[in-house]
Image 1 (cartoon, protein in one colour):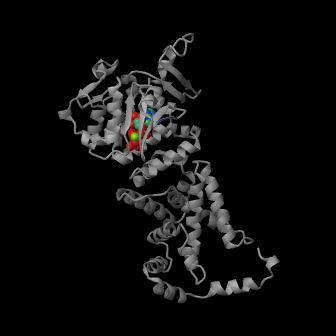
Image 2 (cartoon, rainbow, N blue to C red):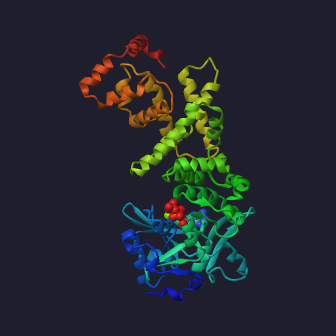
Image 3 (tube, rainbow, N blue to C red):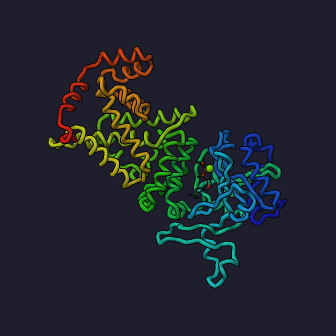
Length: 451
Ligand code: ATP
Ligand code: MG
């Protein structure tokens, strides 16, 4: 076991003893403790860090537990057979325990350490190996190992740079995180401009933590965002998708959405939505608001939310606007609808990636709206048995709740679901027979002419 007080850089921390903070081992996931103890038994220093410490200090249940250590990724892999090195930008180790993943990172130096490394030193001789900058100052690779104080300094916000050790159960604070936690402030570490240029996603993270924790963003941390927001254009659509989902599923999506809009960052994640909210119908705007509120509520009840539903809702005002703008009389309504749906999804792909299964899901939810509305003898059961019926129905209720008049359609479907087989059949029999007539007519066509 290393005595962590001999760790280089540790003398720079303010140490908060056990009786002055609320973190107890009881609140730490047993698997995270296991990793901490195993590393420590093998002579490495290991700390709980990031959201785990931050949330425990705030009395919240952390989403996951991150660990920082002086062991290299290879050392870690040698100690845990369930460990996997991942990541290109940062090499991190995932240790998997069933469905739980503990993320372990090796102490990293701030990127500037690279400048101190003479060119002629063999790459293997130094701790810092592999840092690279793009011309705009963005960090492309950042695997320069360093001491714990440097590791703290390269983290994003002061409240995310608190370290908890099982040696004496202390919290170590290198950047004034405890004070900001008490003042409920998100403050970036170092020069805000520089830190955002290195990684523009930090601007989105500031918004996310501000929404999630109900913290203010410190003035100097917020100030450059309006000017630098456009740097998000240099971030890959895949990473922006990930961040968007994190923002929308942080439990405070409604607040996050407002902050994104206000800060100008929203224009780089969902410009078409914001544009449509300015020009579209009040109902479509209300639907977005209700969908986000509903997402927050579901998460607070430990229910699942799917990106398909989120995108279906966020893009609904855009879809409505595009449908209203399409005056092509040649196209059948169904064709127009499909065309508009494709256009809207494509437009969004200019901002964030959306994995195919979610664009398919969003389309299905939209398509179900037409089919739920159509409601005739022929289609009721097939709609009801659609794998995404529940999402489509929930969406329909949101539309009504947002003020759209659908003549009690939501109630009808609620009753239908709750009824037994007889009641279902009765409800269907009471419907118009339009569908079956059309079908008979179709059947009379010669087989070759059917499309
Ligand atoms: P949560 O897990 O609750 O979303 P978190 O703070 O743990 O929040 P993670 O994305 O899990 O966030 O990252 C863990 C830690 O790694 C952060 O607390 C922060 O210290 C550091 N970190 C993550 N992303 C960045 C980044 N882009 N720049 C600098 N540091 C970062
Ligand atoms: Mg985390």
